Image (cartoon, rainbow, N blue to C red; front, top):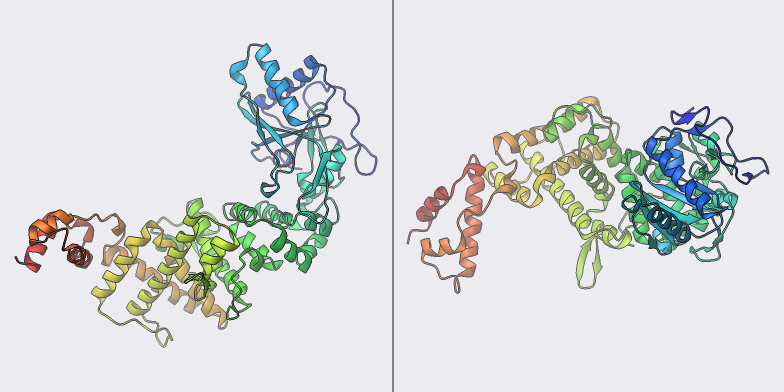
Length: 545
């Protein structure tokens, strides 16, 4: 049993019409109820008061994720209430009106309405209102009828129809507020929750074709809760029908929303691995149609993702300059947003060498995926590009400074001072996320070496040590950590005054001086400790009037 289950309910049950499940038996789960907070009890009692005082006959059910999470003993916040005989807006207005009549206006907000929007998974309008500090969504029970379109024809349905239309049995459970009871209309939800199985209420192919985004939801829920996919569902997700439907029937924005849910969740690497296992990885990260992109690119991306997930705590601690993490995977010590960016960049990494024409300019394949295939934000496209490009620069620096004995990598030429300036210039543009690039550069190297054949432990240690040495060189030897915080210490006007230049006619020369001064600053032992006086002295020595 899950920790959120109780053997008996607390309080008196109000009479309500019987709840019949899929086989004609009662849908009420015997011997199981939910552990409610004092605030939740007060909220539900208030809703029942509204029914009684208004002379209504409706049955109120909390639907979906709140019930699932309560039964699992997890925190549950989003309360979606389904009503059996009226639209959500009508009942929400009854609640607000009753609260005003009782002199409790401060405890209730105004009713908002979210219109139906299939692209955002809103197939019927939803009424929203704040009551007793809870943000509630009210909607009627519904049934869906799909035609050739992904957008269903909706009508008010029964509780059984509403349960059967949902993506997974674990998300089809209800908490009947009138009965104070958990209901399982599919007859499988409680059993699947206990057995940790993701299963669809209806045959999986029908469920997935009706709304292919459910394929990604199944992956997300399975990895979030460490559940397994039921065999028929797993086979269905691997089918060409589902791949084609996901690619052609689902908006790119909805894909990105689900992907972000996976990458921001507790198991981003597991989510990407399961996408790969069911052959949906290249459907989500759809590359431009270029003949030179090998079909194996998704396998390589998956390998890099796995390398990120299995980095040991000591390596992560060294590359991030933090205490050894106690979490697993160790990279989860990263803030959630940086972790999301690391795995997103890892998934796009093998596409880096390729570009496609977009109008008159060439666009890198990872940017195409972010902006066209996923309709991601401009910031995400820019950040992933930065992480990928910086990983290249850091890998080349590691090869130049710490060449592997007998290795095939070509070390770049130039002195160490020139290399310091080059890396310092890169880090000024990259900022604090440069350490994500360091992690990625190592994982790419480990995946590539592993793909060439089984790596010995000594080889992995040697590759890791090269990146750890590079981090130490950047931080302690070159003092470049936080170099992006460097400010321009001498303004353009001051350069003009010192060198006798005219701002209107010598703009190009002023720019050259600033670039040369920035290079000189980076060459210093501690660039961040260079002062304005130091820069002025250098200017006078270098450009005597």
